[in-house]
Image (cartoon, helix red, strand yellow):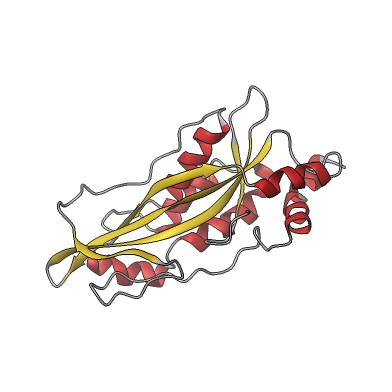
Length: 217
């Protein structure tokens, strides 16, 4: 099996072993920060809206630092996946590009779709930018899911790229903005899985992302 077919089959292998659509991408439901009555996404809120203590500096998208260490790379990907700021001059495509740039060449089309599902659409971006909305992630735990060992054991030779590994991440997504001239924040719990490849003596590359709140167990 050549490299192209081998890398593309990571999606089919994981789905067939674990029995979930972890690697298939759907359009997420993103809440708009509109003060205490804000609409949330499907994640369960972990706290009520609160007054933000300070005004943070405007964040801009920046390249991910390369790393040959799988967990370090997975944490970096997770943090960047949830980091954006509508106050900046960049739009959703620029925030997505920093993750696509560290993607595996053979998975880039699927990865781009995965990343876009985590970001507001251009229409949503335009709406929430009126509130100066920004987002970031606090990581609670990072672990290799139990089902990944089964996937590796049952994969045919060459079906997974060298150094392939999955990390399921749990954390808290934060959003902050201004509602009725008052700084406001929301929090919600999130879980997801990142699939990466870290060949020996090479920097890691991002393969795919699970759907939000549908991680590998």
